[in-house]
Amino acid sequence: MKIAFFDTKPYDIPSFNKYGKQYGVEFKYFETKLNEDTAELAHGFDGVCAFVNDTVNDKVIDRLYEMGIKVLALRCAGFNNVDIKHAFGKLHVLRVPAYSPYAVAEHTMALLLTSIRRIHKAYIRSRDFNFSLSGLTGFDLHGKTVGVVGTGRIGRVFIDICRGFGMRVLAYDKFPAKGLDNGDTVRYVEMDELLSKSDIISLHCPLTEDTYHIIDKTALEKCKRGVVILNTSRGALVDADALLAGIKSRHVGAACLDVYEEESDLFFEDNSGHIMEDDTLARLISMPNVIVTSHQAFLTEEALSNIAETTVKNIVDFFNNNQCPNELCFRAGGPEDCKSGKCF
Ligand code: NAI
Image (cartoon, rainbow, N blue to C red; front, side):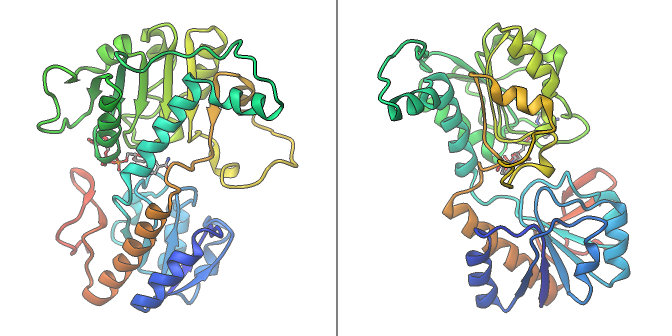
């Protein structure tokens, strides 16, 4: 099995080589992202492996289909960059539904603690032997209320971490998880109540039509003054211009972003020698109470190994058995994991 691997980064190669060798899958690593201009590179391969910022739109899907490619193996959980409806009947789309919810949840807490205890400021000061504490006053997490939007794998791990800090949790999910609401320290509420009562809001839902800009101007106006916004899920959950306005007006106390709506041409790359064209991102990064990491929440050794192993097993499952439990399928009700494996 020969697979064209797009948007390759050096940290991808060791684990994919390891599991590829183990299961008989050969990868050809391309640094370029998959898009309409680069789809041609997949010619002669059995399948394609893509990541979060590859563009798998209708044109890319049609081109891959024309070239006889049957499988798109996503090495990520989210699939908002794939036109799943258009892929139906043409391309089998496999994904890695979970690889380490701990990686993302722990990074979210790392961002929160860094922000509210001003670690990013203290680190720079002490390297310059500036041991002044002025301006470094933080606040306790104990006793604070955190609003968690999306209580799936990552959201639930983040809730556990927050409970360890003695925080109260208000959760919102379109499909609430059974047994999570204990009527006391963890309660499911409507989105408006979550917005108005939370000191910290953390987003752990997928990007869908429902959740696009779930944090916009109107939502921010409902929040407490000083609210801390955490987004380690998908950039377009937050309207970045509204967030910037909230930061400038001091209504938003701090923001920690591992994802950004317009990240695809910027994140994962060294842009340090370039002029930053995105004024909103440049202004957000310039703020002392905004921390941006470049979609690194997943980046732990454990997660990379799990991603590679599951992706390779997905490919092998599909080619050997013509089915894969991690196939995405667009059926009448919407995209869902196809358990039958006989989509088309
Ligand atoms: P999951 O599928 O286990 O959980 C998602 C939860 O969101 C589910 O409980 C679902 O019911 C809920 N949800 C769906 N629609 C909703 C809506 N309209 N409003 C509120 N909740 C809604 O997914 P998991 O593994 O917890 O991942 C969550 C998100 O984290 C992914 O969709 C992905 O975008 C992001 N992610 C980010 C990474 C990073 O490196 N920054 C790495 C991995 C995932």
